Length: 224
Image 1 (spheres, rainbow, N blue to C red):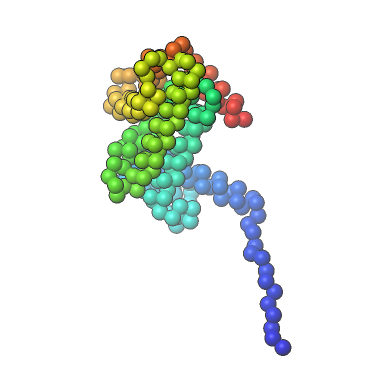
Image 2 (image 1 turned 90 degrees about the vertical axis):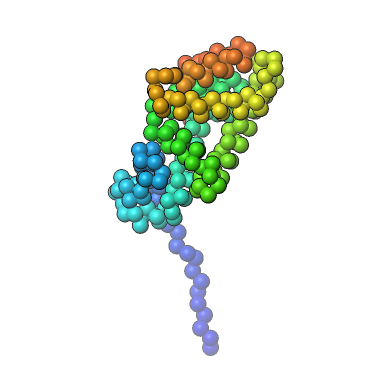
């Protein structure tokens, strides 16, 4: 008579454990964003990130298998925070542009994060940088999203004659990046949000800049 073994289903973690794990993951991302913003990616250490969330480096690596994997997650986390301000899917293309202005205003309150982005985007031009593919994909997404916003403005009859949606998107992206560098070097030299708004007013007929507070409040209400 042969022995038989009863198959048992793998135990599932209680839902509360998943919630705790996700909360810890978010805490790690917030801490890593701070550490990388303060010290840069190369100088910022996993040990420092782990210490800020009260865990060991080995425990951190349980959530993110390497420093480069953590960096990718941090960059995605930053993008999630940006998407909470800019909604490229709304029908009104001008509203999407106002969201970009609101984002520029919000970025002015986080110089360390802005510096991290500027430094990484420059370093990532090297093909062996861990963020190289990320920035290539991100610039494609940003150009296409802003182009779509300008096309919707064109379709509504508000885009000024001679303005090409794609070229306008490329110029907008370049302006935002360039403003960040100038602002980091000398914060008093420019108001990033105001400069961007003036740029849009030169391409969109009847473009009226809502207050930054209104733009942020409207986006927050839409997310509820």
